[in-house]
Image (cartoon, rainbow, N blue to C red; front, side, top):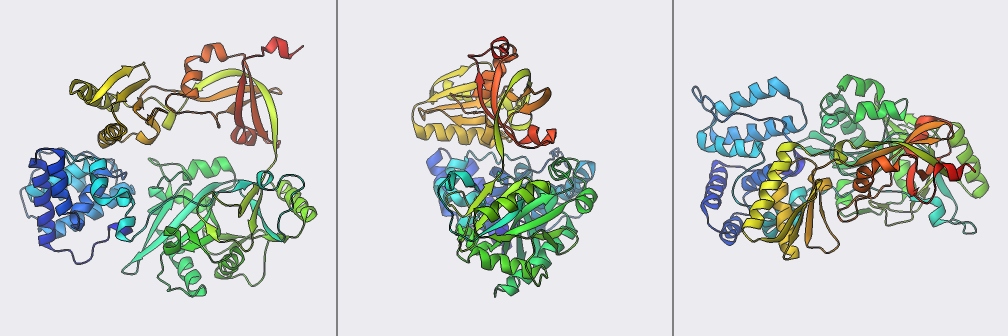
Amino acid sequence: MPPENYVDGLTNDVLKDAILAMEAIEAAEGRKEKERILQENKDNPVLQEFLLKALGKDKFYIRIKEDVNSDGERLLPLPSYVKFLKALDALNKRRIKGKDAKEKVSAFFAACHPRLRKWYMRVLEHELRLGVSRKTVENVFGTEFWTGAEKGAFHYHGCNLAKKFESVYPPGKEPEWPMAAEFKLDGERSLPFIFRRNNVPELRVYTRGKLRKTEIEGVAPLVAQFAEFSATLAELAGLPSNSDMFLDGEFLATSWNDTSSVVSKTKNFDEAAFLSQVKVILFDWAPVSAYVEKQYDLPWKKRKELLMRAAGAKRPFEKVKKCSDNLYVLGHRLVYNMEELSAFHERSLDGGFEGTMLKVVNAPHVFDRKHKYVLKLKPEDDATGVIVECHSGEGMHDVAATHDKNKVKSIVAAWLEDNRCETVHDDGSYFHVKCFTAETAEELISSVKEVVQDNTDHRLSRHMDDLTVSYRYGPRLGYFVVDWEGERIHVGGGIRYKAGGDDRMDYWQRRDELVGKKLDFKVQKDSVSVAKARFNKFVRIREDLSTAEDTE
């Protein structure tokens, strides 16, 4: 069960009151009356759970027919509710899936009272059908409701992000020496949190883009390693050994491609491959209580010392120190001037690392980029190539599912018919809805998010006028294939995409005319072509130049 959803002292009366409240909200007429009933029952933890699960971002990857055979022995209400939460957690983390999941969930529903089963099924379908939107819930509980922060629990708000060394210390400006230099790893950011409830460890893993890695969270040997290491670290720091901890690090296999192929999988995630190939290399940490406050004041040098001691290190080291089968701690070196930094940086590049990370030794741990405490140093060059192909995007840039497009089309048509918006325009790739007020624009966004689970954060957007809401259902550009110095590489990062100024959509619609155009981009100085293809960054299309003109 997710940590913020842990419920103490649950009784049948609390469960009954939650069901009665939902039934009352379902029957109530008008938003204000529904909101009033919700306000009266806002302290009910079971009602909170139903709202979080049905309107939140957890995914359950399963559909069950409602004609469930309910013959046989029936579960009591409270045990069925606890079992339901455990089933949702298993589905969300893909511990059960496919045919096995359908059989187990169907058997569970068959043992539930029909009155409870109705709401369980609606939660599973992400459709409570109460006429209550996320906006209405936020009016009652506050915007932090979805992360559990209002209940004094965990709220994920991102991680520490580095600034470019050159932007903070341009030529002629000296840093405050010494600084700690670390090798910049060529992996994927690992942001694990270890929670304990009744001494049972629970792992949460996030990406820097705030997505959950639920498959990795279910790897039991990894959970055990994190639990043991975090307990040791907490004791060394003078904290209770069962403290909830945040451990900042990087997933790393033999190469970036190997790392990505194992770590990024969802449907076909291979636990054995993860355990045998992936290292989790840690370089910082904080108690979750400090993370929630967005700053941990213990200086970096003390945090790193404790991290190294928890790894069993008796003296400083430069590379990595193994803690357990999959956990490692990253080393560092103190540099006292630019000459020492340059020497370390050259050693980093010669060793195949991506560059150098620099840490201010007396700095607190700050979980955003609004600081100058963590810096990155990696080489880049400007380059120009010729566009030879245009490829449509995958994932967030791909075409929307037909059923999602149809749901949104029905919603905006109903809004127009009911005179809740000014205009609706379908341009073949977007639905553009001009609303009357900023508040109604937010209501429309909430209404769409209630019925569409397919990456709505990347498909829904507001225009500069703040009144136009756009939903993208069409595909857009993923990347250009560019001929550069005889090599064909991909350029996709750094291209703007937002409603009212979607360059990816514009380039995709003009893809035929763009082939043959010059493209400026930034490329990492590296002789390995796959690194070039991954780290380059789009700058602009040189529509003022043709291939012929540039070869003169």
